[in-house]
Image (cartoon, rainbow, N blue to C red; front, side, top):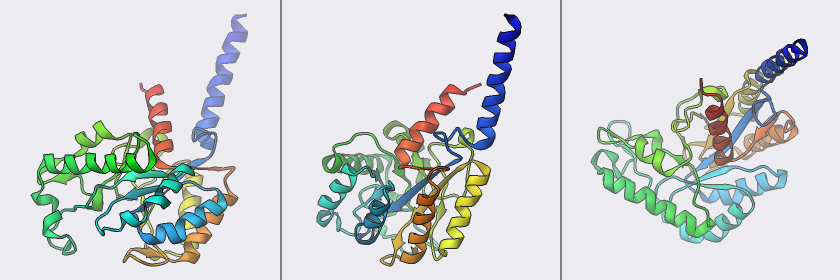
Length: 266
């Protein structure tokens, strides 16, 4: 009897090791890919949502209203949320830290001169607005311009209280046990070909890691832009490899990572 128990435990350890090596920890697949789109651009509604929906892929859209265009988009975002896409928080007015190299930052929305109360209020109000659109109270956050400070003070503790996870802008493909849920890295789309972005996916498949894409313009409307053709090539590659790639919104993937990390604490 003892020999049977011993053999069973050995088999379990071998299975766990194989799972880790093959990436089966990612919802039974080799890796996870999250598609994120920032700023609620019109091209996200015109170009991105139809492309995603035609393939049955789900993504996260980080919504902001710095250009005063959200009022004309509410119906489409409500429909997108009902169809399984996540509407994430990207603040109301997209404040960033200004300074040299950041001349695009308007003085009224310069994080160097915000107070903690002001940024907290703005983030909470953005949550209220998103709830009015999609009826949901649980979501993720994306740091504007990747900035995590107001003056010299970090906002990460506030973000931890309000969100399941938060995306930064540092370039990384972490394994599941190394993901920092409140500073998730990404690879940003800006001028790459479809083949270049597909190579990122192939790398994360080989290494059994997490890959988050950050897009702004898709077919125009932003200085950070990828072509419609390149974006389409990426989406079709993801769809063709769904058996090996878990493609889901940031909220779903973050909750899965949290549960894994909590269960596997040493």
